[in-house]
Image (cartoon, rainbow, N blue to C red; front, side, top):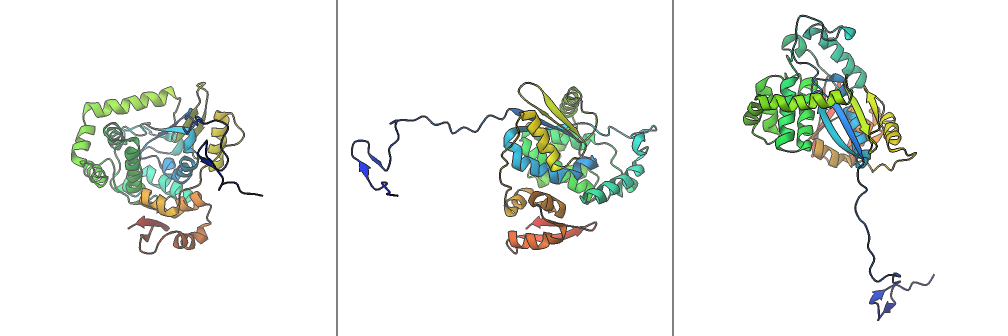
Length: 307
């Protein structure tokens, strides 16, 4: 085939094949995200911790289809004499420890849980209010980063995230003024922000955690309660978009993902990249530059930290 790209037209000033129109309007805008996804959750929700690997991959590969909203649901206002969750045998803080350990072992997102015997979280409202104040004063992304750090501290590293000093230190590590922000969260305005989320959760019909609700432009949606498979969330998105196929984006490289997340458990990498547990260390060695990360272990699960 003859290549005419070297032939330049003196009249049009084009080398190669000129278009039919001298000026063409092209729309480079991404399609408008018509789906709102509401993730109703709580900082001390163990099943929310368990779905982190799946939810991260769903957001990474299909997030271009939806606007993601995190909604605080208010799992535990305070302990009292009556049953908190009788269906699961939860009457007092110590009852939570065994349940959390089961969730951690089943999901392989590590949960210690012993602090619920020794130094129990008294309420999920303080860390939830801090989330809302970060969201209001800064960005959704930074608030979500804080929520991730809070869950790491609580579940894997056994820190009491209802304790003011723990909250201040976590916020400081995000590069914010922990003391000022946590003090602001303790004001009535902090609880008011949280109450707005509680109202939204009720209006969405969310009564358990995690609940993911996807709503389209026609105000019709899909509600998914509890931890589900990656394919289950993708199918839900197809239903709400009323399409048979979706176009996922390529997963980010592991180096970029670890740069963003700072800490990843083995299970999270396995889910993101379809890697077998037995192959995880070899996979990480091929994907990451030596000296840029550390391999650690907690509760029998390995995790990787960016240096």
